[in-house]
Length: 107
Image 1 (cartoon, rainbow, N blue to C red):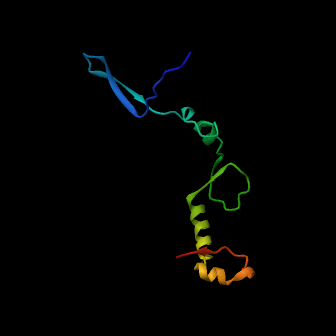
Image 2 (cartoon, helix red, strand yellow):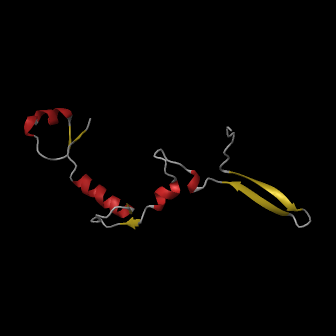
Image 3 (cartoon, rainbow, N blue to C red):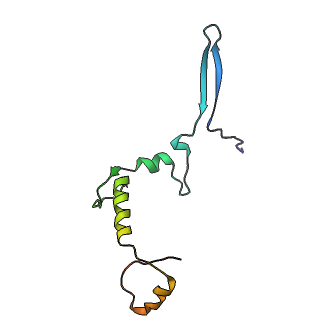
């Protein structure tokens, strides 16, 4: 049998359950983490539940940790301090003897 359904999220309505006391029941339709499915078939609850924690330690080698913004800022600063902007012509002029360094071609 085919399933015909309409998924409602992000909406709410109120239903009066006691007129004398003006008591309303607010009913909300919000998405649950277990309802959000990713392209790989896992849901958000499973995927995000696998995160062990957040760390600012730049030397962490164990998987499962998310990076703290201070760690990302520190990493970004390290990259930008070693950033060497060059043009395409300068890069081409290096020929086959290009040094082992990351170059960003600008312009």
